[in-house]
Structure formats: structure tokens, C-alpha cells
Image 1: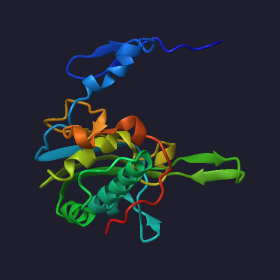
Image 2 (image 1 turned 120 degrees about the horizontal axis):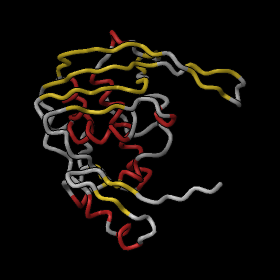
Image 3 (image 1 turned 180 degrees about the vertical axis):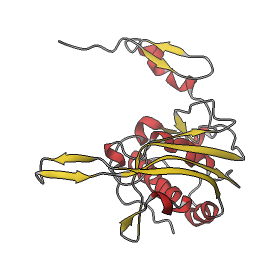
Image 4 (image 1 turned 90 degrees about the vertical axis):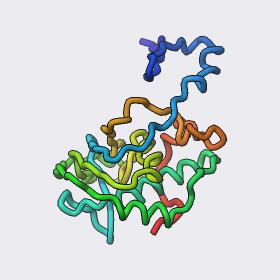
Length: 208
């Protein structure tokens, strides 16, 4: 049995059905690139796939969640993927980003640990892949951090991201528009998400 892609549905203010066999329509995809929403005063991040954050050579448990560790891990991943795609990021002042992340307040935390494992054919054993699931609400000066947080919904964060771990979604007053490019409000620095959404979760620019 063979499968054929009939239609691609683009989500946005006005949903669009796209015929993948229509070369002109596919070439016009950039016309449907919404911008990153304006930064809110607060936002809720819901982790629906286990988030595996490492610090000091161990995984953080739910009662140890640290927003700065989460955010700097996200920035490392996004930076690495942008480097692989040959695209420069507009804000590469990593020290300032890290300092901004440390100033963010975690107003509410509802996290728990979820255990799961995967089978390794090479090692002939099951590999633990547990992590944190649930939600956090953050507030503070999110302006500089917001584009990274927003696009992180498509990149996954932490160890095992390449296998689907670390997926989250954002709920915020302005979060009604889904971007297909990172920093799309600056066309000169737009990064197509299809270039950012694959690749291993390995070393990238160091963020203190």
C-alpha cells in the first residue's frame, strides 16, 4: 500500500489548505509566515513530553526546576540548529540572555516526574528516559527571552530532544499565532523552522 500527501493545512488567523503538488503554492509558503507574538507579562509553559534537564552531572527533579537552566539549555539547542542551517541569530549576547533568564520569576509550579524508557538495539538494554511533565507559570521581563521561548515549542529542549523529549507549549494572552520562522518579525534574520527542527542535541555556543 502506498501513501500520498493530499493536503497540508496551515494554521493561522485564516487557515489555509495547501496542495503539495502545486509548485506555485508551495513556493509561496513564505507568504504565510506569521510573526512571533508580542511578549506577555506572564506565560504558562506546559511540558507534555518528559523534560530532561542536567545540571552538575545529574538530572533535575521537579522540586529542583530552575528556569535559567531550562532557558540556557533551550538557547544552546536553538543556536546549534541555527549554526547547522547556516543562519545567524539576531541576539547572540548569551551572557545577557542568561542574566535575563535568572531574573525571571516562577510564579507557579505543577511538575511531576514521569518514567519511561527506550530500547537500545546497540546496547541491548532499555535506556531510562524519564523527565519532568506538567506546567510552570513565569513572569518578569520576558521581552528579550520571548522569541526563544516561543520558537522552543517546535524544537524540544533538554536531553533526548532528538527523540521527542522536552516538548512544551505556551499559553499566554498573546499566544494565538503560530510562527513558522524564528524571529520572523525581522525578515533579514528569519530562520525557517524546517531547518531548525532536526538534528542532534549536542554542544553549541556556551552560555553561562
